[in-house]
Image 1 (cartoon, rainbow over the protein chains, first blue to last red):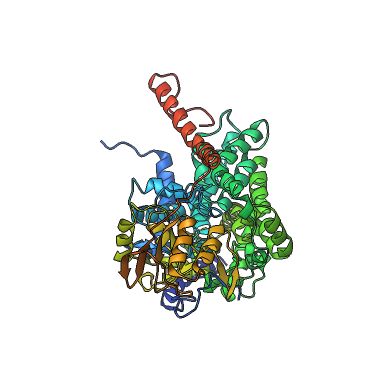
Image 2 (tube, rainbow over the protein chains, first blue to last red):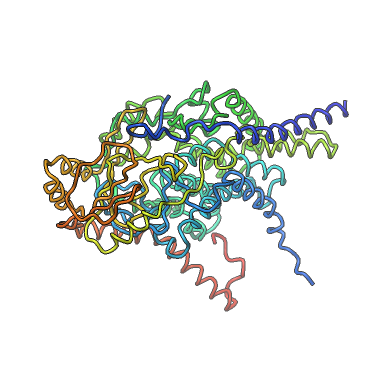
Length: 50
Length: 577
């Protein structure tokens, strides 16, 4: 039982740490959502509700 | 022999280092050479301390007192460096302050619990969204908030207003919404037993510049009712607005909601943080003194209620903003969520503490869980890193901006910035959206469009001189346009040929500069705008009130130093200091 809880704790903690690293790397390589702005727009939207 | 380190320094060092590391990770490449120009965040090499910055401009002041504070500080520190320093400190200081809210009887919480508090406070949706909105005074207020709460709570144990509170309140009031949040925190932390009136006076002093400037502009201080619906708290992806608000998200502008918040990770964040907070709620309630509980819960309740009100009843908020001068400040509901952060952070940290007490005893397991708990906010919002995934990047102003500034240095009158469109996305700024920076750069008071366009729908602006300028531009000849502009106090016209909006008509005057990215025309006759003496007097008093807490802190500090040197007071000071 002790081994199992220790193993589970390592999986949870290690999983979050690995997830953080993966997330950081993945988010840096993905295309930004709203940038760069479309320079051909007649007037730029300050923001959007959609 | 090396002197032993102070226990408090050794105790705080890991927390400070972690907070700074997070701030550096958030900004990343944004800390390189250049200015960070993102939506409303417009910093220039040398901001002028003119009528606009002092709240004496023609339009409802939007950057009072922040612009004036920057204009003074950038005389001491170059604007570019100052901007970076302010952002790093704003992103780091709040987490350190939040960790201090976990102290019990002067004893700090376990290191891992404090590190969790630092990460939750410094790495969340509110930080990402406000950074992308360029709302740096809100971030400064957010950083100051836990320190303000701590100082306000300390006031209860001493006779005098803590000097820290005198220093922090003006810092927390650099914008209207930040000032209101600071006021709530001060009152929630210190009210009672003769302190309430003093606390009210203190927050009134801190908020005086924007309050008085707003009153002077009362005729234009009401907001478009339609804006309340637009700026209301909004859901993130499939997470409904009131639930998103529980984890400090829900800004109106979906364009700045991080991608990780709008997908499945948004739900995971909600479940994980709320579950940890729920686990921590009972032990926190049991272990925490009444006054701290009341302060943090009151702040949370005010913040969440105000935010949800904008979502629940935007019509009512719009009506108030339309009829009550200055009430439009609450229309951006998610801004009120800064008040929810301290309670969320201490509950999540307490939740981690409670779970840690049940964790396996093996060191390796405890370390793994500790690392996981500290990194959890990063795993839930990875796209906050490195300038919110490179959406905040340094840029250099074109050389023409500097030329224009020099050419206009000794000219009379204000500057009209054309075309009449508020936002730009120039190539030199990586095509990132930014409030037109040219007016601020030139070091002159200026007239520029203040219309906001949301999803193609314009929301009316508040500066009456913009309408006057538009009417002047509609005159039939170039000479008549110039004459009419001169009559409303415009001494020069600056045109950004690459900006969106209708190309401006020809205006008679002397062409001072004609570059692809900027044109400057000086007008011949200008009636320099007169500022009423009563306005100058009122704003003078407001600025004196704003500076009074700092002056008082300085005086009491000097007095204490003198008394300590004479041996009349212990070096540690007296309670309340």
